[in-house]
Length: 172
Image 1: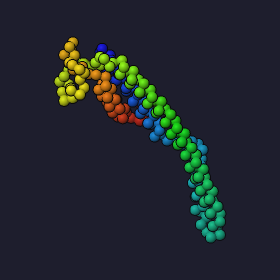
Image 2: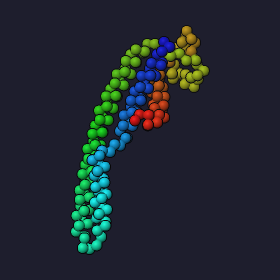
Image 3: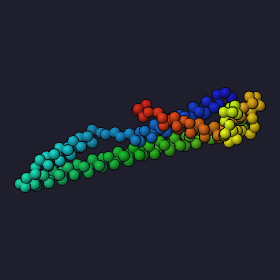
Image 4: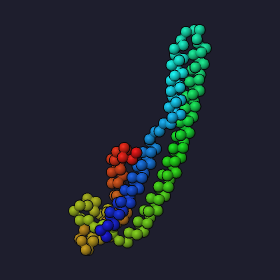
């Protein structure tokens, strides 16, 4: 009985860490060599176009600006494709994570439904003892018996809060 709360906390925290990792991966921006090269070419073309400011070189400047605009469109297209692929990856894994989380939570509920998950002294849960308590006080310890549903809610909130506090550098 002593390990039940810790095992449940570990499982819930593991799901929260994986979820946080996927969230950080989604926010992380990666730039390919092709994108860097296109940005440099665009800068160079716009720089050349701005240096050609006389009326006799207007046609050349306009041509360079059109080339730069075409390269910007190409760069935008590459970025959109990359963003679409990243979103697809994130959606696929987050959906798999949700399914796994539901299955594991159902297994935990089924396993610990008829027995309390932990016994806590009543003075620690004073304002919320009625919400968290199992049917009756634990006869062996005299504490409040905590059921699986309140324990899952509590551990989910605590582990989510702790994962948000972790630095993003830890996941990269």
